Image (tube, rainbow, N blue to C red; front, side, top):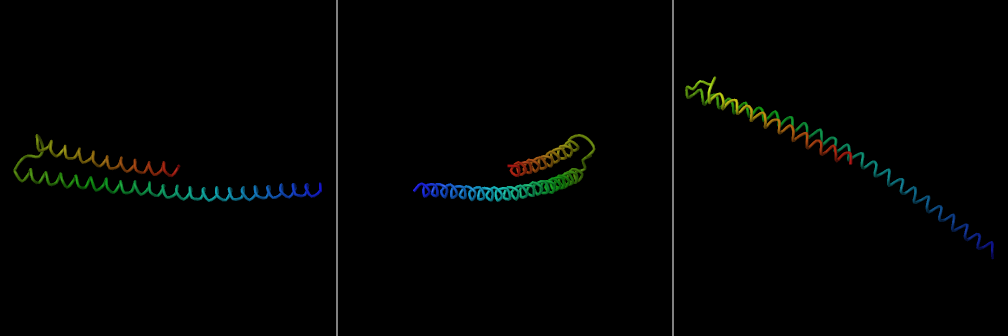
Length: 125
């Protein structure tokens, strides 16, 4: 009777150990899968960050072109009225347009880099 009890105890211990080994394997596989998912998410976030910067560069360039077009229209309109563009209010208007256009272009760049930074932070998480 004692041998039967010992055999049952030993069998129970072996089954428990086998269960723990299986659980450890399952945990290791889950961790491996989660690491792969995190790596893919980091790669996606990196691509999104690069895309945000590229879109920002294009939008910044577009903003500068729009400003140059506006300046050209202003110069043409002022000159069409026979006003000298080289001093006074006409010159101030053109200079102000250039300054505001550059500020807008730089804001576009800053916003693109902020968006990219957000993606990079997301990728590290």
